[in-house]
Amino acid sequence: MLAAVTVVLGVALGSGVPGATVSALTLPLVVGNIVLSPRTLPWFVVFVLGVAVLVVATTPSLSLDARRVGAVVVTFLVGLVILVSSFRRTRLGVAGALGESMLVDLRDRIAKQGQMPPMPQDWYTEFVMRSAGGSSFAGDFLVASRARHDDQLEVAVVDVSGKGEQAGTRSLLLSGAFGGLLGALPASGFLPAANDYLLRQDWPEGFATAVHLSINLRSGVFELRSAGHPPAVQLHAGSGRWGVLEAEGPILGLIGDAEFGVVTGTLQRGDAMLLFTDGLVETPRRDISLGIDKLLGQSERLLRSGFEQGAHRLIDRVESMNDDRALFLLHRR
Image 1 (cartoon, one colour):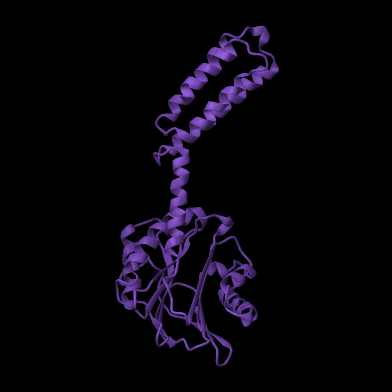
Image 2 (cartoon, one colour):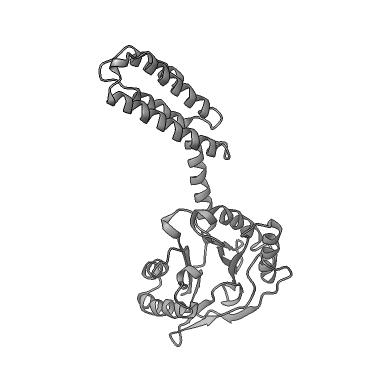
């Protein structure tokens, strides 16, 4: 179909239709870039440019004014750009429109894996993620697991090395793998299994930090483990003060047979807990402890009026340093 349109345009241009220039051939080039496969597209570009050469060859030299010469140059530049992009797209093996739909599907899968399971009415959860540069892909993600009619909730907030689109592919792979591990293993076995998985991948930048929370929704008793991740913080409703829950453990994917310390406690009624990534509290010119203090100050002011949409209000208030940011809020009503 596109070849036929190109031939018709070539005949019309060769017949000297008033006002028509070779730049009209950019239309099939652009459409072909959208719908044709990477294997077919280079041959189609060569075909269109060949038609353009024939049109120029059959045009009387006196008719080749500056406007027509400019149109020829533009057509060949467009063809060259599309040709180069088609060679790069050959690695994926799909057409432009299909490739974009695949990326949208991957983005939706990441978002779906970050959804919280159904919770009892006396618990409130909220997760917010902001990627560097406003991209739909990020290196921060959340996975959660709670079996039906089970009081045990498992939540892990993970920060993959890199940011934005650069970390998006690793983030997608790890969110699927970690989501399968979470809930299938005892709480003490999740981070060691995640560490072993990353070591087996043998990626050049295959490391990540994570914080893992396992909490009984009936009693509020929890276990918190960390792998090189910023500490969690807990609001004690009785005193109105925030406390830092700092569990020790190495970054995932660096050393084998790693051991991860555990912090235990209880989330009483009215208490809350925040799990977050370093993009929320760390800057090149500020120690992470100062960033945590600033986050706690903002939390005390913003969450005083209620916890509904509290994570959104908090992450929007904290300054961004061009890094992915993620925040998980858990509140026991």
